[in-house]
Structure formats: structure tokens, C-alpha cells
Image (tube, rainbow, N blue to C red; front, side):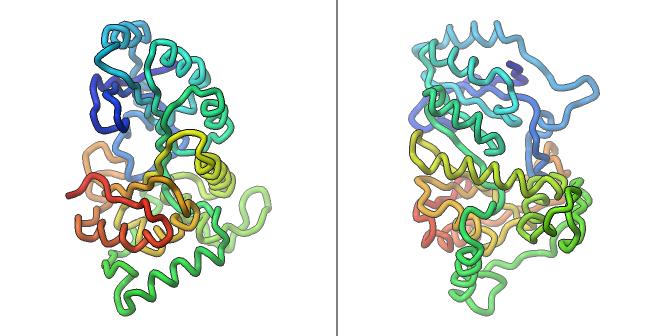
Length: 299
């Protein structure tokens, strides 16, 4: 198990728990808005690594003060011994929260079904097509009809899209076939590739994996939340409506405002956030599909 960083205390990340956070290196996505570039893109000498024995000693010492451990990244489910590590944390008396992008559904299901995680926070970065295409189109149309004459249902203006090539996702024309000779890539697949920072030819399979993870979590076998970091260039009300169609009825969905920083993978200043008022308008617009939708991280 590789750990690249430790936050000794968080009162916010694990609901109803005082927790420490462990950061795992490596990720299969390259989201341009990710602020943990050092955990996603390895440096010349690879990723930083902490001594596991030191981490174990810290956690044992803090038992009775801390009652939870958050495992985040990067993408923790890339770690081959994640199940054994979660079992070790549970044996020490800690509740375990897992953050994931949902691209490893079999591993996620294994952890949940073995009782090795107590809470899952999963990113829904873009729509993955769980809802039927007709439902997605109807959702977007319904939102748009509420505020005719504005740029989208929230009445929020959007700048021109940023350059996909900047993020290593120089997408082919939507009419082109993928490398396996399958059907042409659909617009939603190109969008997912752009948001996740992946090669478009991988979008279809990754969307299926993320959809499988989301569907599994909505069975309610473990407390969970979905999260979407909302970026002005990547998300508008119609795009959020498509995500809402995928997770209709979810127990919790948090819309998080993008925060720019020097550590953002796409580079500072390349992406932009929404105002607090705009974020609340976007959340309001999707509540007819996901009543639990809330804004997080803004006033």
C-alpha cells in the first residue's frame, strides 16, 4: 500500500467522524480541474512515499481521539492491496471512508460487500448514460424551458469552451470511429473524455465502469454521496441535468465550486468557477431530478 501524504485531522471530510486523511498516489484520470497534480502526475523521481509503519504508529496513538480514516488520492482503488489495508484499519477500530472516481466497480463492490468501508464519496464528473438518452434529452429540455432566453436553465452565461488539446484530450471528430472499429464516438463520450482528461477512445469503457459503480452505490448497501466539481467551461445546467438523470434519486449529491490554484493540472487561469449565486441556481435547477442536490464549499 502506497501512501503519499497524511492530513492528521479533518472535521469535514467524513460525516459525523473526526478523521485523518491518507492520500494515495496515482490516478487513471487527468481531470484538468484536479488540484492534486502531485498525486496524479508523477515527478522525475516518481511519487512521494510515506513510511507505512510511521502511519500505523500515528493512527494507533490517535485511537480514542480519531474514530475514522479517509482514503483519498489520486485514485485509491488503483492500490492492489487496498482491501487488506482497509481491513487493517477496521481491525484498529477505525471507520473507513473511501473517495473514488468510480472506474473500478469490481473492487468497490468487493470492499463494500466485505464491510471494509463505511462511507463512499464518488465523483460524478460527467454524465455516463445510466439514464436513457431520451430521459437525458427531456431533462435538459425541461430545464431549458424554465428560463427561455438565457444561456441555460439557470440563467447563467458561459464563456467559450477551453481548448481540449491543452489537457491532452485533443478529441477526434465525433464522426470518427475508435481504434477498435466500434461505433463512432458520441458527443457525451467526447465530453466525458474532456472532463476526465483521458483519450477519447477510452471514454466508452470508463463511462460503463463509472455507471456500474454509481448503480451499485444507489442500492444503498453503504452510506454514500456523489460529488461533482462544477467548472464553468465544462458544466452548465444541461450537462448537470444529464448527470442528474444518471443518479436520479441519489441519497446525496454535492455540487462543489471549482477552486483555481497553482496545483491544478490544467494550469492556473485556464478554468473558471461559478459565483455562489450561480452555484445555488445550478443546484436548484437539478433538484426536480435529485432532490438531495446541495452546494458545498460556497456561502
